[in-house]
Amino acid sequence: MFVFDSGDVYLALIAGAILSLFYTEKTGVLPAGLVVPGYIAMLFTFPVSIAVVFMISFLTYFIVMKFVGRFTILYGRRKFTAMLTVAIILSIGFDYLFPHFSPPHIVSGLMAIGVIVPGLIANTIQKQGVIPTTLSTLLLSCATFGVVMIASFI
Image 1 (cartoon, rainbow, N blue to C red):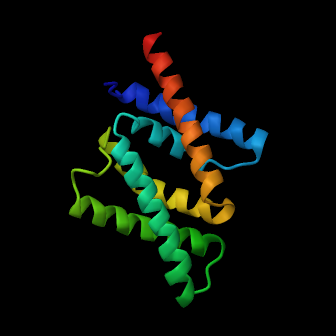
Image 2: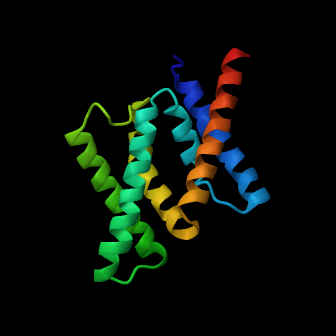
């Protein structure tokens, strides 16, 4: 099993951001934020954690669009803030209720990134839909994981 060390973490985040930038420029499809593919790539050895991240993302999107949107006008920063806030609350709740299924914190400093990733994914789902967001994010996460694996052998 591949274990990320601190150098690999930086490489994953940088490679994910660069690959995301090129992918978005070529296709026009957003992969749920620049840091998301790098973070998901670090979870590839924990597939249940990837499923948890996407489950929280889909639930966040549903809650914000179907419930929060009924009580306030959501647009721009307000919508983005609602997505992040709901995702963080759901992530904390899930970590508390199901600690064995929570995404591992590869490096303690990444805990903050881990709790905002579902909000970033949910926000992008709202902009361009479930399928393009999910597929592009997973594709770029695979590519980022490949870059990190190749770099670890060099």
